[in-house]
Amino acid sequence: AVLTDVTFKVLPSAETEVTLALRGLLDDHAAAAMALALGSSAEVSSAAHLPERVAARVAGGSLGNAAATLLRVEGFGPSVAYRIAALKDLLGNAGPLEEISGDNSHSVWRAIRDCAPFADGLEKPVWRVSMAPAQGHQMVLALRMQAAADAFYDWQGGLIWLRMEHGDPEADLLRGLVRQYGGGHATLVRAAPSHRAAVPVFEPQAPQLAALSARLKAEFDPKNILNPGRMAPAASSATLGTATEGAAL
Image 1: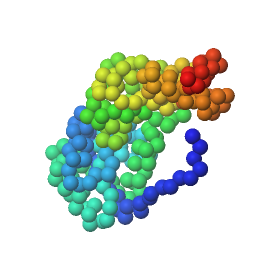
Image 2 (image 1 turned 30 degrees about the vertical axis):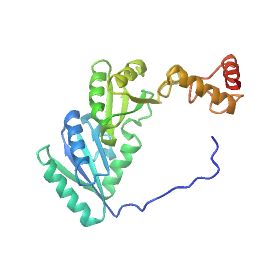
Image 3 (image 1 turned 180 degrees about the vertical axis):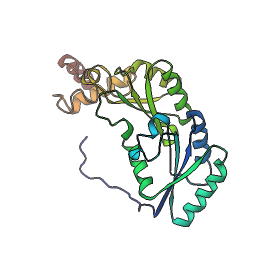
Image 4 (image 1 turned 90 degrees about the vertical axis):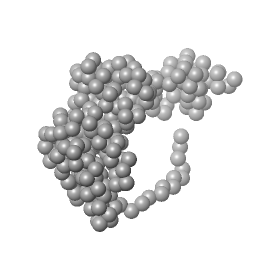
């Protein structure tokens, strides 16, 4: 598509931001704590979980080595203080609690957004997986029983960043487990060129939908010059001809 006119609705940045960190939780307990916090009246704006091996790679190591379950609260100062206190009362039995504020909080969430723990210059495959928050940690546990993988969670666990440690994307295994645990989308964000050429970057579509997509692309890009092979495996001239004929029908 070509965009010629774009309108954005924007909101002012929050006056105050404080992140409450629960330390040392395992993935399943972290998922339960995030669900409890997001379901409360504290108006938590972001929730993420950094397991033990990941937390130390965020914000210059300022979080230390222990796993960190992070809950961000934003707004006016008195409101933020009140809601942080409510969260502490709600989650006081979950484990040790810490407050992170100001630039330190900004730095932590920027690193989570940018997948900084896995931005190491290596070619180890990195996946971005979207699925139901309640199922994410279970899928990751099942994956780790069959392949070496590192992971952390954003969006209350609905967004999972995965790094495969042995170089193989394990696409069939991962996507099979995503389907097994309720479905979702697994996007290959980084991999060696040979793997990117062989593995579909985006979640494979059903055959009928894939055929429709191919016909539409052939209509809008008959010479196959727009990002060839990036969004989907590069089509041969024979395939393009078939798709074009199908679209004409």
